[in-house]
Amino acid sequence: MAKTMGKPSPPGPATERASRARSGETLEQCVLRSLEQYFADLDGARPHALLEMVTAAVERPLLQFAMNRTDSNQSAAAELLGINRNTLRKKLQQYRLL
Image (cartoon, rainbow, N blue to C red; front, side):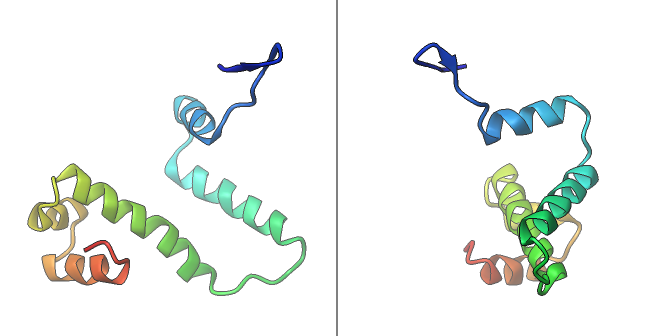
């Protein structure tokens, strides 16, 4: 942990994520916690297109992970994700990952 003027710096997002992962937090619990925080941050304002927002927030990094994990082999990434390769290509284009 880095120190500034004798005080430890607060943990950053990566440290907090690693800590939660070690504590056994599931992906589902992480999503629920994030949604609770999102609604708290809205401070009474009404959310809009919640499903689209959450889907994009999860789908884009999932596609990136699958492509990285398979060294950008679209057939292998599609198989890993359990989707058709054409569907994968469409989603990669949608998120501008091609």
